[in-house]
Length: 270
Image 1: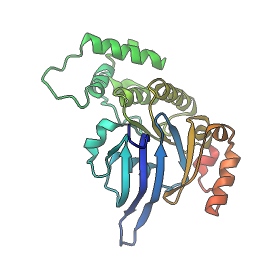
Image 2 (image 1 turned 45 degrees about the vertical axis):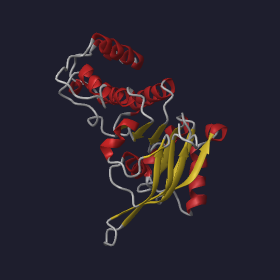
Image 3 (image 1 turned 120 degrees about the vertical axis):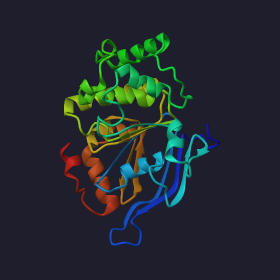
Image 4 (image 1 turned 90 degrees about the horizontal axis):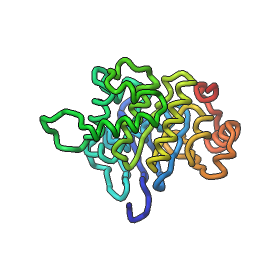
């Protein structure tokens, strides 16, 4: 636990792409955000607001220009992406990302479970590991515990995202990053994956951030909601106030803070 007690601290983080060119884009413009342990924060905002860029900054996809990122008391600002991996679990928008299609379900889970351990020539999955994977798969309620030797490439998009969620959380990461992880799924499947996400986060007492384009989902899930606009956090709400929110409240808040109308059809029509 950090001295401040925060699970995540983002302090005045800036990122400009293509600086000094005609394509210069200010992606993050002084982002400040603290997460308490166990916070499940949903992040909304228009296109180019900085939502996924914030998750990429935490994950170390590229270096930030200014500011600091601290996870559970460890300053990871200058750490390479692969050196941040032990702290983080991440699920992307594309169900094909995050799993190895040609490998079995249990082999995929074994890779995730052994992450950070020294590699050996011994690959066989132990009886104890297999029991653990079966137990974890049972919780998903998708019947995948009976298909542990099936190739992941044969699964549906929703099943693959459920497996990816399990893989991302197996090692109890300090922070789970969900980057529009239901956007590519049909509404019924998306709802099931969100239900599984809630369950995994709650049962493992994880701290999580979920970028979503769906305002209703942002309100319905998590204990805290933040809205981003032009690379910074413009609204931060939690507790009872968040529970009582409606989409119209978010739209009104956006117009009040940004001085413009919310122009993102994906979010309004969702």
